[in-house]
Structures are given as C-alpha cells and as structure tokens.
Image (cartoon, rainbow, N blue to C red; front, side, top):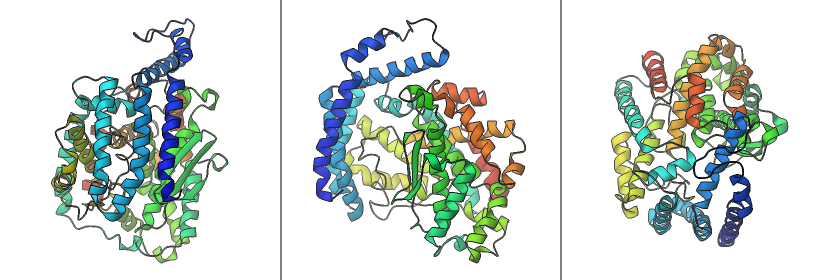
Length: 471
C-alpha cells in the first residue's frame, strides 16, 4: 500500500470493525444465543447437546459478552486510531525516534484503559485485557510463575557467563537464498505441512496467516544474519500453520474450528522451533542434508553444530534472542505493560524505563529506540495483554513436550531417523482437533495431568545448558 493510503485505510478498517461489531452484538444474534444458553449465568438451556457443543456455546457466550460490553463508537475509534498508528510506528522505528510515536501511544494506552473499564475486571485493569488473548488467565497466576522463571534464568545465565561460548561463526555469511528456501521446504514437508493447503513465501517479518484449515500460509525472511534464523522461522511459523490445518474443518465458522488461545497457539510454534529444531536428535538426521545444500559446512561435526545453534548471547531484539534469554524479553514487556495500563508509568518515560529494565534483566542497554521500545508492532496495534502469551506459550510447549516424551519414550531414535509425523499426529489429537472445546487451563491439564507450571521448562533449560551446551 502506498504510504499516503494509510489514512484512507484507517477509515476503511474503522468502518469494517464497526459493521462486524454490529453483527456480533445484534438483537437477532443475542436472541438466538439466549435460546440456547443463559447469558448471565452461563447455564446451558438446551438438552441433548454433546460436550463439545456445550463448549462451543460457552465460547460463543464469552465472545458475545466481550463484544457487547464495548460501545460501537469505541470499537470504531479504536480501529481507526490503531490503523493510523501503525505506519507512524514504522516511521518512528525507521528514524529511531520514539517521540514521533509517543502521541499515538498515549491515546492507545488511554483507550485500552477505557476498554478495561468497559469489559470489567477484578483487582487490576490489565486482567481485562489479558483475558482477550488468554481466557481466564490473570496476573495473580502469571506473576509468581514469571518471578520463578526470572530468578532461575538469572542463575543459569550467571553459570553460562563463566563458561567458554560455542563458536557459531560458520552459520554467518552468504548462503544462497534459493537453497535456504528449498531446505526450509524440505523441513516443512517432514513436519507434515500440507502444501496443497498452504504455501511458503518471503516477507520482511516472518508470519503465519490462516483463513481456513485448507488455506494456511507462512512466510520467512532470508536476509538474516544467520543461516539458522530462516530455519527457525520456518519451523516456528510451520508450527502455527500445522495447528490451523489440524482444526476440524467440519466445524468451520464455530469456536470448535478456532484455536483455543494465543498462548496455546504459541506453544505449537515454540515446540517445533525449539524442542525439535534445536534438538541433537533432529540434527543427527538433517545435518547431512544441510551440508549437502551448503558444502562449506561439510567439516562441521554434529556436536559443534548442536552447540552453535544453542549459543546463549544477550540480544536487544526479542525475535532474534536465544532460548535462555527469550523469556526475559517477554517479562520486560509484560512488566512495562502493567505499569502503563495501571498509570504508574507515563508514556513519555517509556524509553528510559525500557532501557533500565533491559539492563537489569538482560544485562545490555539499547543504543537507540529501535533496539528498545520501538522494536515490536504490538502496541501500535493496540494489543495490550498479548506479550505474556509468548512466555506462557513457551511454558505450555515444555509441558506438552514432556507429556509427548512420556507417551513416546523412543522419540529421539525416531527423530534421528527423520521421523516427525508422529509428533504432528500426537499434537493434532491432543490439541488441534479440539478447537475451543476446552479452556486453555482444561486443555493443558488433559494433556499433562497438571495445571500450567514453569517447572518442566526450567528443568529442560537447566539440563540442556548446564549439562550439555555449557559443561
């Protein structure tokens, strides 16, 4: 879209948001819903419904109540503001100047506070926004988990700092873009990505976009500092896309053909990206293929490659951070978001607060706003409450993978043979095919037998990085 088209697009998006909101909150829709479920209590009024049908009703009610709480004028104003803000954010990021974006962020924060008031909340306004991305989750649940993660990772980093860092220089340099794309396609095929239902393209920022289980597309970028970045992006976005492809198409248009939450969605991408794509067993099979594609890697041994792709190094950019420090990037944003929404942090003070937290948590200070508070698009989209789902998804992924390894104790031998479809099928049966029939909390308990916990992930990190990578 030409830059000058942004204002017109903002008007269009505001109108579309308004029309969509009208449909979601119409009297006809409300009456149809009320005939099936009591909107106030949530009691199902219709007999002979299956458990999954009752789950769909629960989610329809949840969505309706959220939509009905927001006045049409607010929905239109919010959509218009964020559509205007995104190109301004992009310009501010390009110019490394937060002051260009600050007036828009002021308004976005103000509208998010108003949104929280409309939706209603207990204890903290952030809870209302968080529920939009991760249903039934609250800061009372998140805070103690994130504090434990922060504490244990800090200890692990102190241990790592005393050890010799692996050499990963051979991953940097010029690598054929076409060969990178071909190799990523090979991996996606092995994961079970169905090309007749999707496609792989290139973009500035990798993403997954799904319109239907039969149309789920992904992109990667090849202009990256490391060969491994494109591989990680393909497996990450492939994980998202496999979730969408695995949803029950016969229920399309209902909550039963929708992902249960942002964090559960992120668990699928993080599981494939890290637990598979950064495992030694996986590369025992696929390293020879990578060497065939890029002969200059021919002398690299599996142990050296494994250590290189798992090197821990402080980074300013979240999406380029390593597996150990990644959670700290999410916690940084989460803590700042809570303060902005509570009103204990002024927008004008955000760059300084960001830089200080980055120094405290990760040990480095951004040199400019682009490396700091302008690096993510989420706030320009108005998506407050989104960031914690990135870490929650990582924790869910470890909990799921632990359950998977218990169900398939021979997983490493099978990965080493290049077998991956059995993991895709396990995730499809455990997660994908249920849509929103269960809440995130119910789903993880069904899979692992336990509520959400940080313990599996921390145990994994400690075993891997203290026992293998940094001995």
